[in-house]
Structures are given as structure tokens and as C-alpha cells.
Length: 304
Ligand SMILES: [Fe+2]
Image (tube, rainbow, N blue to C red; front, side, top):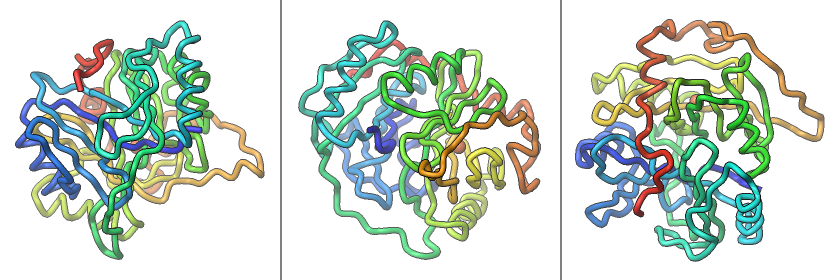
């Protein structure tokens, strides 16, 4: 089974500015850097939750997923090999990233590069304490796609994801374990990153983290509020140098499969997206930021 999102690797036009933002504002910590690749960690054992490198235009390099075992990595490689829309990038083998391990890389149906790894060494980390604004780790990633149905079907058949809920036919939330979603697909004119969501320790820490950004003069793009689908809180911010959208979130719904779960279809309304009614109206500016620009990284695996 795919367990969680390990990290997202991004290409950014100004590595120094981006590192500054993620380290000093978003409260990740620089774990290691070789000058070309910056690895940033958070309050979890993952060696890093964000990898940055400098590229001409903003692009997504990798979506990195954790599998339970090397055997699972091999099984996914089999399914990639048999799937007409999947393209293998690297056969399963030793992983050349901090933490090592065993991994494969492939292009998904929209051309994103996905890495699935197992046996990755954790790092010594400092757990997030009460009132601390540092994120614990990655909660979920939302991906824009021109074909939500095709993308969700692909992730179900190749990676074993299950549908948790829909918003009409424009958003599909998917899980592998008990968290309501670790990946979601959102309808857009093009393939791109919608946002990366980072988990806060709890509701108090979520509000403190949101407030810490505001005190630095960085207003939320959207929020704070609470989503009706998945029940998680949200405060979206935009990285000023790359345009990528990040979310602080906490308290997502836990699904107990033992008691059965039937995916529901929610209407696309303000009551679905903002149950508290505290968030600013989701206008064209917010939608444009969440859609981002067409990702120049699709169908082109990163060199590292
Ligand atoms: Fe989110």
C-alpha cells in the first residue's frame, strides 16, 4: 500500500528566494544542500518534505510517495508496465536521495513524474511541541488535471488509491489509509500543481501558523476556514517567488473502513468549501492562483 506523501520536489526560478520563504516564513528547516538541491524537513521522520532546485520556470519535479515494502514497489512497477497510460522512467532500484532506499519512477497519465519508495531511512527530528507553528509534515497534495475521472482511475488502478468523496465531477479526493485524502484531483484547463498541504500539530498551532504568516505581512490567499469535504481546516498562501500555493491544515476526517464508507458527491458551493463561513470569497484571483500555469515539467522527468 502507498502510505503517505513523502515529499514534493519543485523547480523554482530563484532558489535563494524560495529557500528563504520555505525556511523563514513557512517554517521548514534546511536539512541539507549540495548547492544545487535544497532539502527541507519538518517535524516528522521523513528525510525531507520539500526538495528545491533552480529551474528557468516553476515546475513540479517529483511527487514522492511512500510504499510499505520493496515488494510493493515491485508490484507497482508491474502495474506501471502493464498500464497503457503509464511510462516507466526508472526501474525499481537503489534510490539516490537522502535516506536512500528502493524506488521506481514513472510518468502518470498526465505526465507527472511520480516516485514510489520503500526502505527509506528516517532522520532524527524534533517533534512539534504545543504552540509551535512548524508543520509536522505533508498532509496531502492536490493536483490539477484536465481529466479528473481519468486521473483518479489511473491512481486507483496503478497505486491502489480509493475514492473518498467527490465535489460534483470537478474534484476527487483519494485515500490509501485512514486519512480522508492524501491526494486529490481538481479540474483545470491544464496539468499543474494546485497546492501542497502541510499538517499542523493541531487547531491552535494551525491558527498560530496562519497568524505568524500574517504578522510577516503575508496575507492568506484564501482562508482561514474549514472545508466540508474532508473536514480539514485551511489557510492557503502563495510563495511569492514561484507562485506555488501552500496550505496549512489540520484535523482532517479519519475514515474507519470497518464501518463502511460510501463516497458522496458534494455540490460545488461556498458551504462545501468553507463550512465555518470565515474564509474570503473564492474569487477568480484565488482560482487562478490554484490553477497555476501549465507545468513545463510534464512528460519530462527531472534530471535528478
Ligand atoms: Fe488542501
